[in-house]
Length: 233
Length: 290
Image (cartoon, rainbow over all chains, first blue to last red; front, top):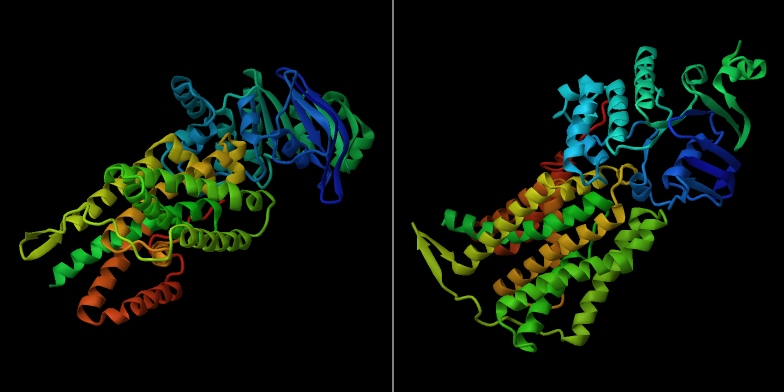
């Protein structure tokens, strides 16, 4: 479904990505792991149109992505950005409605609002509260819910566990798995390697802008070198 | 006498509010002071004048042309003067300087093409007044306030209740986030300039009806800017409150103290607000708790 080929990207003169190729299939749950500065966020920025790659192609369902953020959303890709990026002065409901901004089917949006409130009961209770007044965990729930509101075929998540208590991280990942089981493909960028490897089907290990390793998570979990480098065992 | 001055102040203040609301919309979205906003009002006033004197069209049509024209000039000003600066991540200061340049350009353009003389629309609105319990209300003042109240209520509904308004609020909260959620931010910026220009055009014609039409009449935007700061930069209700406050204060100072001290009081209010409450009366101060 998503195919990234030989992607290069840089900031000024500094190369962040040096020829990355990866793929996400229909309904797949894929993780991109790696240390700080490996280029994980840049990869998601390139896909969602926030950063323009210097070389390489990104295609989705066989079509090249336009590189214009709102058009990427229209084509069926939702980004749950790093740091949640809740719009603080808008209510929870308004944040969700912005998530559905590209859609024109009012009835479907209404149904999806109900679906989201079922998935995240806390958001239902806080509909009229300002997004900025939610706790970190609630904001992450809202960010995921807001991503769902565009009814994406593929959801990109940038470090959803960042700054959250372990129990909340578990909740978020449980919900991601539910979302994945209901048919939405997921591409997640994480530093929480252990958690991501236990949830995703496949993973790519990124290091200084190149893919160092890739494979099924069940294999990577038993890769001594990797476990040593990232899990410290 | 007191009430009479309050009513006069409301009339002037409503025009300030009209200009300030557009000013504030642009500020909330792009975070810079659009110094050319008052000159858009001036251009609107001149479009109506030219349509009336050279085009010989009925005045209502001249007004429609002025409003539409000012909206287009405002939108074009973004495409010509600001868009490139916005898109290459330059400091906001560059936008402000570009706006100053645009302001001078528009003023000189009118001076060269139409001339620097003071002009009027003539007697299009009857110079009559209605007496109401000791207060005399000019027909023009009543009309001005009526039109502006309708326009501002419509603006409030547009921003607060529609999908367009949701997009504007999302983009002014965080442009990058709004774009990844599916808001076409460039389109919305253009539409906001159009909307602000429409309001400026309306204000320009109303000012021209009440006073004169001249190339530097846009300097009234300075008062609108103060109105925005007093009310809270970036807050449209704040801009309206600030505009009305300044209008009423000016009328009271002019009526009871000295009309020469009017502006001194306005600037004193600006300084006082900056010292005591820098975010303004209704300033947005929404913090992110998490």
